[in-house]
Image (cartoon, rainbow, N blue to C red):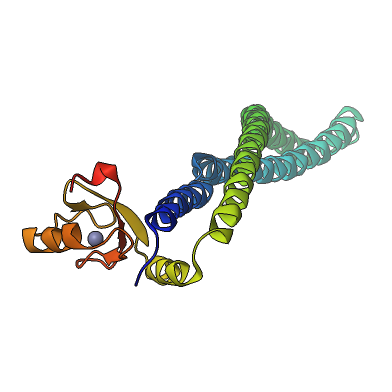
Length: 245
Ligand SMILES: [Zn+2]
């Protein structure tokens, strides 16, 4: 196939633009902000779990507090009643002794319950502090997520703007490239290869292979408008003054 060296050189511009577009696409897929956001989401979820755990513990303690408090109140009522009976002076000695025993027992039980209540209150204080800490941590992560999201979105819109500029430029270049040449280029690109590359210092700019002497001799002998392909990778080898032929 033949194409003027000028037409072949346009393929180099096209390959450069496609390489830049591929870099932009890769950067879009692998933004560090996306990795950062995934990590932040994990940490925020963990903080939320801590908060939920603290809230459940707080509800359990509240129930426990009410149970003990209600038992103490019941006991106080019973003690008041027993004390009134005791002071009435109407009891037989045996009943009096039994009542005194009961009152002493109630007092001991109440003292135990009051200690338990104090312990519950201490736990409530600790859980309350833990809950506040977890809440603050969640809020902190919410802020970090919002900041990272803003940075990610800014990076994405910059990449999108770059992509638009390159895509427009690519459209202009493509419009000027010979259709048959473009077809070869596109077929090569679709198979993940460079499509077209500069031949420089006997090396294919597409695959990087050093081409053998026989091949180079053939290339040197061929006319400028002959389209030469790398015999290693099929890339169109564009010859310029930099090729060192
Ligand atoms: Zn090659």
